[in-house]
Image 1: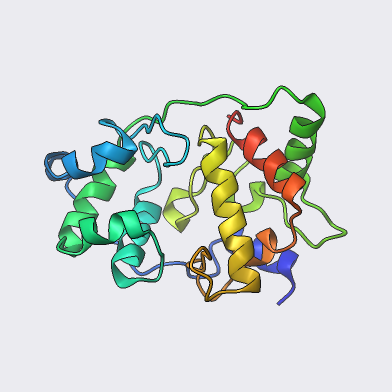
Image 2 (image 1 turned 120 degrees about the vertical axis):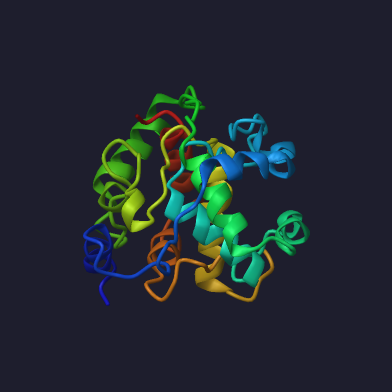
Length: 214
């Protein structure tokens, strides 16, 4: 399937990304969140740029990531032991709790105006020559994502973390068995197809722009 067309299908919610989501209890999730705080911060706003901010992230997306880590579909060794004994209800409650939070914006993390301009152009317009769809198709013009469809919020996320994930998806496109590969974008492969066409500079430009988009 053409990558740009696939991106349009995803933005319209026509490609399934995750199973149906049951109801989570945010209050119960708060009581279960202490184990998450070491990496993600007490309120879900990680201060370490290597770890994602999860406060205000889409509930459906968070739930899918927790399920994927437990099933092994997403490889995060630091989380494997933590989620091993959690139930799906625990995941639903944690996802509801963090989704109800507020993400603190990072701000653009580069002083290079040319690099940020490149990132903005990619984010909003894609790269037709490389067949890269614009990020706004799934993640919205403000970077807030599409929570009902399971497309994550990007705005305000740590640039280092965003870059790491884009590199991981790119590795997943080329070498899915690599331990650093990320492949949990489903049968659509939209993130692997997009990231697989990005250069190192484009990844850096996107990551730095995304950190400050709002």
